[in-house]
Image 1: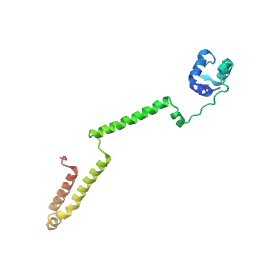
Image 2: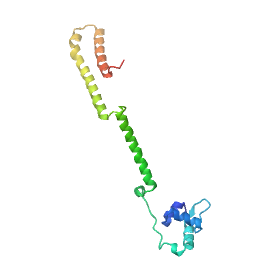
Image 3: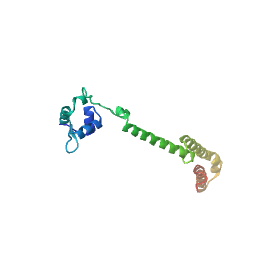
Image 4: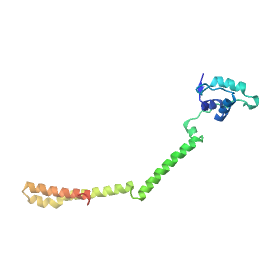
Length: 166
């Protein structure tokens, strides 16, 4: 005894949901109290109570659908696909809007700017020995050497932070 929903029974019989609902309204088949249909009993009732002119030569084979077929079957799946498409279009429109209002910039622009800033800092740090070598060689006070090096490194890092760092 297999209890099926109305839709499942319609697939089992190879008919539309409307045909099953019509058979229930006309009394050709009777659902259980919970609204489900005993497929064996309903098949027997369907055969016995359906006039010969309304019977099919043979019932249509049950349709087995995989997910790809179900997606292309139309109906509700079309609307679900349409909703997904509209969602993606809305996201793309939001990105385009943010680009035009300068709230969003391209990844390439960010990479170029970061590379340029890093190159400036690297150059500033690598130039410290050239700028301070003679001064540090002549200096005998350790504290003054430390202060000169710290000041030069701080200036290089300030260049990385930009003009609005304070």
